[in-house]
Length: 545
Image (cartoon, rainbow, N blue to C red):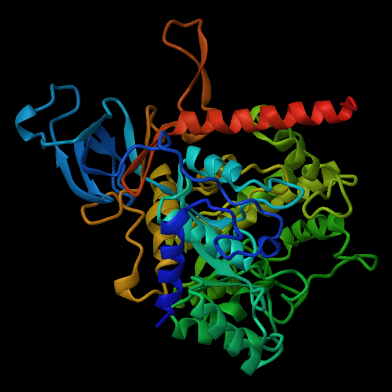
């Protein structure tokens, strides 16, 4: 189906010299769009994989939506879960007779909670002028529990595939990567521009030959959209779309679902499918979408243009359900719109946000998403109202059997890699999801979206803690069902049982990817040091040294 030789050659190249100069790997730096690939994984970064790793005495939240259970011992052989064994009852001593043995490495999970690794379905690695060093972003993702990242894209076509192969070989500290690419991309693509059915199909074949996992689409004209999706599905490639405001008048979310789109990301095109009295948004006469405050300020004004529970609302929802359409809302990335001061002053910025990333967040008429030219209470109130309606749709869709998945789109609008993803989980709970439903969305359902178009024998077996699945898991020493905030890398502040001590608790402790055990706190410390060094360098530059 795909050009397996291409992947084999890449893997052989990597095996011959991981981390060698890019020229030695026959890579063209210009094709990486200013991104710096992650360095080789050092010998002290991650332990394993092991012949037989046993995680002892954990409480398991398995990702299916079922209740927590424990204590259990989880056996991992190589990079696969081999066994999940109940070893007793809460409040009683462990039954040693039930414990599996012969471990060559153990993790004491007593008092901890074990979950499947999280899946971020809307990821960007960073970029020139923001966070060009991929190591920074990868460690923020991993340290906040993300073990699979779907790039839309992670960077340029070439960078995405280059880093995906290195992550697959565990040559770098990074989540496993799924690479969705944009039509027309590819430095060596010499075919026609994507302007009609034949050219759309020709480019998809090019992407399939290079083993891209799927397509990140915009709101193309209907004939081109249909051709891109149809050709992608022939090759087992997935499709998702950011149906931008410039195209939703001719390709809204329902239109796209009807021509076969697998999922939509963000909100664009959803409300436009359900307007009560218009077929397009009635923008002010002076609206200019290239002015980003216009763009992001006006989109929330749709909140009263649809009627929750109306015949049209129910009809659109039912048709999307019938089409098995996935919603990947990425609510987190727009959350600053309803409270910009909260986003700007988040706990993690001081220690974890690079100065270059911070610069990018500041009001700018040129930097995408930096639209705080004159953000008003009116704007924030519109966004708060918009979220109420949007969240109601998402919760009803989930309750009727629809799949709502998780993504963050971090790196814009004050949302930082990894931390923004945990905020997405909190916002799903705000929308009405029980925490078990939140975790299922972040794990099993997001894995189902990745696998939607893949042949069964090429499914990524992730998203559930179950024998036969890949050993991608996280451990946290606080109960995330009681408080999702304990998943943040900065933890959660509370008064301890002595009644006076204020402390930070939580934060993911261990991240297991492909059977390799990583110390999440060490990864966070690495990021803090990167930020400290960047700030020191900035200070020297400003002092003229």
